[in-house]
Length: 111
Image 1 (cartoon, rainbow, N blue to C red):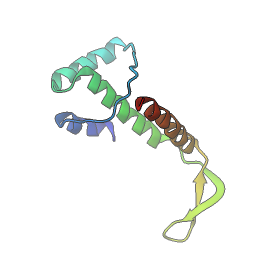
Image 2 (tube, rainbow, N blue to C red; image 1 turned 60 degrees about the vertical axis):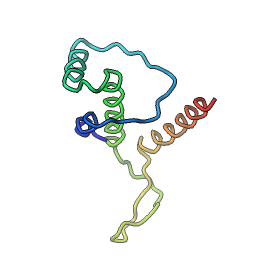
Image 3 (cartoon, rainbow, N blue to C red; image 1 turned 30 degrees about the vertical axis):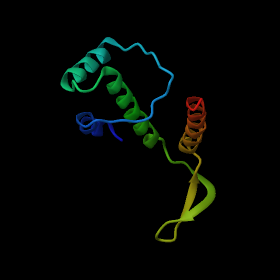
Image 4 (cartoon, helix red, strand yellow; image 1 turned 120 degrees about the horizontal axis):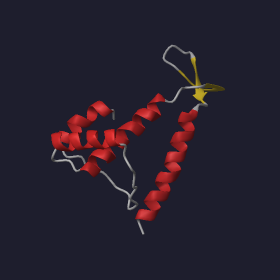
């Protein structure tokens, strides 16, 4: 999801699994003013929902912005028969660590 997709989502009702853990952050005055503006523009969304969805979109964009770094290992071939090399950049590490932490969060929420 991109930040651009959020406006559409805010007009619909978005739901998802939430952690039991709360995260407290202090915003800059400028960011707080922007959050207040969004809250006024989209009154069906709480400030917490806006922050959650903005953070989700930012993390998604961050993940897609990680550079692809070709390793030495061929993992596949493309439609032209050219080799496709494993990604040894930050993306695989991020995905694996995300899966690890997601499993921990899910295990903790089932208690």
